Image 1 (cartoon, rainbow, N blue to C red):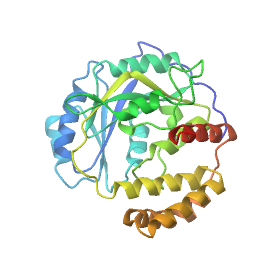
Image 2: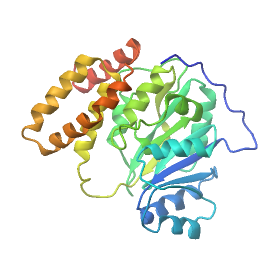
Image 3: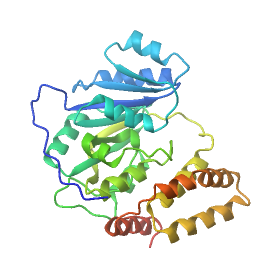
Length: 303
C-alpha cells in the first residue's frame, strides 16, 4: 500500500454538485422515508442516491411516489456494505456523505464538511459527531474519537482515528475508491475499521471533526447475532492486515470462548469459512500504521 499524495481541493462555486449523499437500505421503507424527508430538506440540496440492497418491501415504490428527486440504484441481491461502494462509484461527486436508513445530516453539516475537505487536501475521511434519538444525546463514540491517542497532524483538522460510524462519515471519493471501499469479506458489522486502516496506509488522513453533526435514530431492541458478526469481522480484519501472531492469538482466544459461548461459535465458523480468501488477500499494514493500531488498542485496554 503506497503513500498517496494529497488531492487538490475542489474549487468553490463549481456548477456541478460537490457533495452527495449515499444511503444504503434494505426492507426498511418506513424508517427510510423519515431519513429522506430530512435529507431532501437540507439547505445544501445535495443529490441523494439510495442504494437498495434487494428490498422485497415497498421501498422502491415509496421513493418513486414521495421522493421523485431521489435517485435509486436497485441491486438484485443484498450486497451488505458493498452497496456503499456501488453508491460511491455511481454518484460521482468529489465528496460523498453516508447515511443509513435511520440517520441523516444536521442542516449545514455538509457545507462544513466541504469546507474542511477543501482546506485539508490530505483528509480522506472525516468522522462526524453523532447525536442519537429525539433527545439528540451524544453517542458514546464521540468521546472515544475525541480522546484518540494518535493526536493531530498539522495538516489535518482533528484527531486521527482508526474507526468511525459508517452512517456519520464523509469521504473524499478518490481516496475511498483508491482504498477499495468496504471489503467484500466483511459484508456488514465493524466494517469501518478495515477501511480506516487502508486509507491511513495509503497516506490519507482519517479524522474526527465534531463540528460536522449527524443524527442517528436506531431501532430500539436487540440486533440478532450482532455480537457474533462483529467478532467475526474483527478477526477477519486481523487476518487481512495484522501480524500473524496477533491473528493467531486472537483466533485461539475465540476458539476458547466458543466452548461455552454460542455467539463465539458462530463467529468462529464465519472466520474459518472466510480464512482461505483472507489469506489470499492478506496485505499487512505498514509498520507506522501497525504502530498506530497498537497505540489505539493500548489506550482502549488502559495500557
